[in-house]
Image (spheres, rainbow, N blue to C red):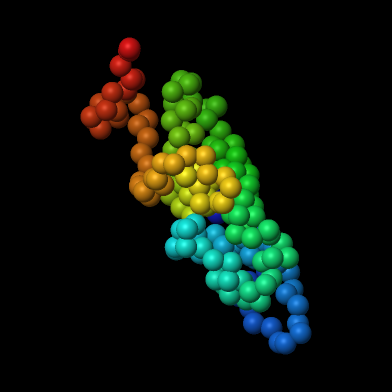
Length: 170
């Protein structure tokens, strides 16, 4: 299963040009969210601008203000939508087919890592320490660099990777 199968609904006419005085036909809020996620994937949260999001959605630069209370509101909506997507994605894994809890956890870990790799901008907004959303910074730690995530599936795989299967006892 791909994350695209459980993603948000596609934007209607995002980026389509309209004549003067014509209103956006479709779900403008979702079109703005989709444009923002595309922008996040390219430039990250720190360089995201509402003006660029509006341009990508094919609406006036003032349009985002009718749906979000600024950049922080837009990023919060993206994170909320992302958590819903992640829940649906993890639920679709159905790790119950594995007998061992460690195998079930590994299946969920792989799905989580796949979500992160397929949705880098959304994942950044959802989980990065030192969030760029004004008023929500909970850590002074710098943002983590984007890296590929890896999960070991068994003790043998852990040994092959040179990592212990279980953390050493204290």
